[in-house]
Amino acid sequence: MSKYEADEKHFEQDHVEFAENGGKQGSQPQIEGNIQLIGNDGEVRLVPTPSGSKHDPLSFGKARKVGLLVTVIWFSIIALSVVGGFGALAPIFFGLYIPQGVTADHVVRLLTWPSLFTGLGNFVFLPLALVVGRRPVFIFASFMLVGSSVWAAKSGTSYESHLGARLLQGFSAGATESLLPLIITDMTFVHQRSKYFGAYWVAQSLFTACLNTASSYIAEYLQWAWYYWIFTILAVIGVLLVIFAAPETKFERPAFAIDGKAAKVDAFGNLVMLTEEEAAHVALDTNADQTVGPKENMGYVESLLYRVPATWSDFKVILNVYKHMVLALLDPAIIWSLGASSIVLGTTIGQSLTFGTILQEKYHWAHQNTGLIYLGTLPICVLSFLTSGWGGDKINLWFAKRNGGVHLPEHRLPAIIVPTILGLSLGVLMYGFCADAAPNVHWIAIVISQNMSTYLFICILITTTTYCVESMTHHAGAALVMVVGGKNILSFGLATAITDLANTGRNAYANGILAGCAGGWLLLALPLYFYMPRYRKWKAERATK
Image (cartoon, rainbow, N blue to C red; front, side):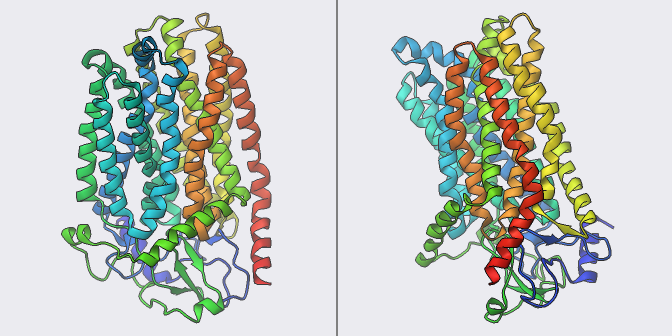
């Protein structure tokens, strides 16, 4: 029996897939984020509950889900590679633009400013996707990436034109951190999300590392314009994948009854329990607890032509999303997730701007060989997935079983313990001291420490993405944008400040500051773990008074 068939059989036998508090409708306050993930029989329950509709992404077949996952990973690889792979090429553009009178600080903007615009793109793509659907916004972002890559390739020796193209590339890459995680959320159950998000972030980092390794060789032997032409070709393939392998995943799930309570899934794909008053005004889906799969299979062509109708009144949702983005900053879990991902991303950006110069000037590497440092990301990605992706789901289920089957969002946090210890010691601190000691230490120390910092970033990204979505379920999309989009904006300022400091030759001091900030902030996960469940319970009780 396949895993899918086993899930379907269990689903038909159990009929109850989610419970936040049990009992009668409204008998106890709903505690946001708490999920009855393990049933009385010890089996994992399916959350959210699939409906009987053929348009329900939870009911997509395995081939359709795999095709969709491959498509979102492909786009993210190309978009983030062309935006983030500039580090190995930086010496080329220093030599090209500085003789024209462009300062070194302005050349660095070719890397740091696109990261800022990636964050801004998050704040545009996700609200639009909530209104007009995921598919049309995904197609638009894909064409934007193609157009901006052509522009960059034809920018010639004009710094201003090159910067403009890079900013548009960064903006299109914003879809990778808001729209695409939302698509993954649409088609996955809660107990699968760390695995799927882990596969997404790890595959993204893995193949991005391979492309970044090749980037310096492309620039050396084919001229730097071909760096963008090759990405243009890959982006065109991405457009074809989006058009032919990415069906619409926006789905308005009808309300249904579970454990004697009415529930619905909101626009962000998160399950919300209804109050007695709300439940009295909805019609329940009587088919929701009868099968995992749809009653009628949706054809391939039909799946690509299907779109979600949108009216002008639906655009009011955008204003509501922005309102909840601001309100998300009042939630301690969101503040912590934003700070953690921002500090760690700022660290990796800062290192990416300095390792090329260190390897060339201190160890006399040819500039086309500096991209080889990214090959260390290959084993790092496997380690990240085992630690926080696949391992994160295992840790989560273990804690849920110890907690009477109830999953808490804070059960995600223990997965960062090992990455924090290894990443800060063998990554951030080691990089700073070895960079200042070069060439008196072996170059492998620079390579190892830079990649261990990347390991910390990937693990933190996996954990904060799932944690923020689960801790603010009623407005998870807004929370997701604030964390993944906000981190690019905050890390922009941090990376700029640290790079200026590192350029003075004080790498140990700069990375020591980063390690202290990161370590102190990540330690705040301890009070979050113990006090956030009480805080959410207090909010739930206060809301019922």
